[in-house]
Amino acid sequence: MALTACSTLPTAAFPKYLDHHVAAEFVVGSGGVLELPSSTAQLLVVELACSPTPLAERFLATRRQFLFAPDSQVTVRSRFRTYAPDGSVPATAAAVFVGAKSLRLLEAP
Image (tube, rainbow, N blue to C red):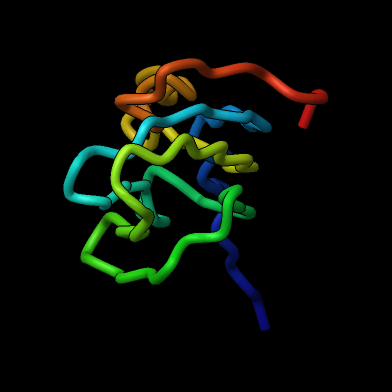
């Protein structure tokens, strides 16, 4: 009895990615809402912490809304991974935390 097998396998490849560990500084607007990203196909949020602690939190499709007193200064610390499944370049931390007054890299992820 003869057995046949497929001798061609697809290449083992994963999308390009970048790991990030950052602290971002925000000033909350007069409405008291700070919108931050949630995980998507191109973004994996591993850790996200706000200081001071928000008054409340709401989840939207691709964003999270944190409620603070208007004009509050908020520090967000986050670890996340950005993917580029189409072969392009993964998003930078600045592209993820749009509106941050400052953004600094913490220890290497």
